[in-house]
Image 1 (spheres, rainbow, N blue to C red):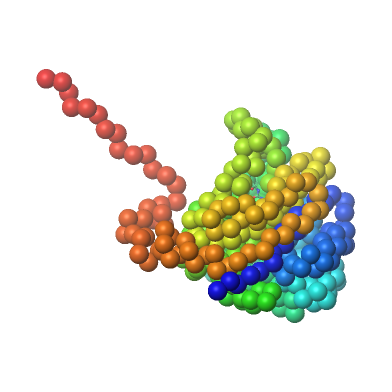
Image 2: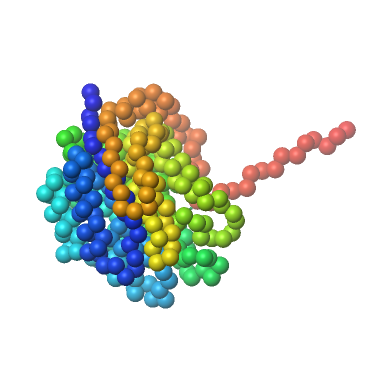
Length: 330
Ligand code: ING
């Protein structure tokens, strides 16, 4: 029985360092209005959608980056987005920098900073929250780099795991899960969601179009290929849909690529953005498509062999293999 969901990916163009949240929120409200006109029931916005991608900027005192963080959601600046969602009856995914006052693992109450994403019900209630686990880049200033990428400086590793919840979505309901940007490159993230029968993964990204590390040639076109490959493989191997949504374009001289996509459980791209600006792409998703993979090739209960996978959680880094040598002649 078809469970149809009209899904929109709302790609954002650049947000300059000097632009306030009101500019981004205004653009997102206009994208939500367009989504409503096109019959969309859910809208997925990018990672860190309210501000410029500030981890490219080094601050001697990390706390000086706190101006990029949200201490409450909704807030006066983001309220128009919640109002639009209520007005149109549209749920939305939002990526933002979260500054929370809460106990850490040692029980100490303190300021904690995360690269966070939420799925918000049209009523304004937060249905699901996720904090980015795979933080790329580095924590200290790196003079070798053309562009800094300081997510390890400004964010803690996410402490919420990869949760999935079954929630009302448009005129139906679906098992939804979240991940953020670099997470899409790690099959473990997809599989943890797949083991919870995720049907729709919502993920935003801010991905530089050029290799920032200058430590080896990487052809420009491969940046997009790797992004699409990761999402298409994740969807196929876990029998789910995904919306992968970019913040794109040139922010203060630094280029992020677009190419937002909506992918089905066969790993096929259903819709793709063709600009590096604010752009809405929409796809009609039959969520019952997830059943085929889950009941056949990727019927985890029948085919997976966890007893052979111990290294995946036992090890962090890779280890060199034993060396084989032919028997001495004679
Ligand atoms: N950005 C990039 C991403 O994973 C990156 C960082 C780019 C890592 C290219 C590896 C290769 O898409 C974020 N924000 O994670």
